[in-house]
Length: 358
Image (cartoon, rainbow, N blue to C red; front, side):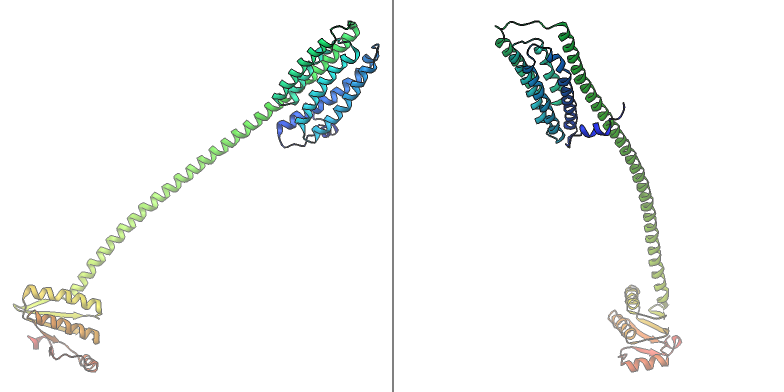
C-alpha cells in the first residue's frame, strides 16, 4: 500500500487524541470528499430531467455542507460532524423527491446513510440513521402516493447504479481499511505486549538468578561467620583457660609443711590480678586449714600503694580465717617505697628470705 501524498495526509488530518475518533474522522472526510465528487458527476444526470433546478439546489447545498463537515472533522469534532452528515444526507434524500414529485430510485439511496454511519459514527448513531431513513421513506411514500410516477430510463438506472456501486464500494473499502488498521494496531500492540512480557520474563529470570547468587553468597558468608564465631569462642575459651593457668602459675600455693603454705608472687600486679589472687588464696586457706602463709614478693619488681593495700587486705582476710601471714623477700627499694607511701604493715611480720621464715 502506497503512502498517501502530503497534501492528502494534511487534508485527512484529524486533531484529536483518541485513535478511534481519528479513524472515524478520516473516514468522514474521505466520504465527504466522495459526496462532493458524486454531486459533481451527477450534474449531467440531473440536467436531463424535465425540471433539473429542484434537484440541482440540494446538490449544491450538499456540497457546501460537506465542506463544512470536513472543517469540523479536521478540528476534532468528529461526532458532531458525523451526526450532521447523516442528518443532511437523510434530509436531502427526503426533500429531493418532494421537490420533483418523482420518487424514482431515491429510496434506494437511503442505504447510504446506514453505511456511512457505520464507518464514521458511534454505534448508537447508526441506529439513528437507520430509523430516520425508514421514517423518511415512509413519509415519501405517503406524500407521493397520488402523484403519477414516471419510470426511470435505462440510462438513469445505469448511471444511478454505477454511482451507487461507487459509493457503496468507497464506504465498504473504508470499512475494510479501518478494520485492517484496527487489526494491525491490535497486532502491533500484541507484539509489543509479547515483547514486554518476554523482556519482563528475562528480567525476572535474571533477577531470580541474581537473588539465588546473593542467597548462596549470604549462606556461604553466614556459614563462614558461624565458623569464625565458633573459632573465636573456642579461642576465647582457650584464652580463658590459659589465663587461668597463668594466674595459677604466677601465684601458686605450695605446701612446705602440714600447716604452712608458701605463696611466691611473680611479675607486676594490678587491681584485677590482686582480686584474682584473693579469690585463689582464701578458699585454699579454708580448705587446707593452714596456720601460716608465707608470701614471697621477691619476684615482684614494683610494689606501689595499691599492691601494698591489696596484700594488706589479703593478710587481714587470712587472719580472720586463722592463718598468720609472713612477708618474705622485701628488697631495700621496696621497703623505702612502702615507708614513703605510709603503708601500715604493722600487722604483717616480714623476714629476709624463705629459709629465715622456715
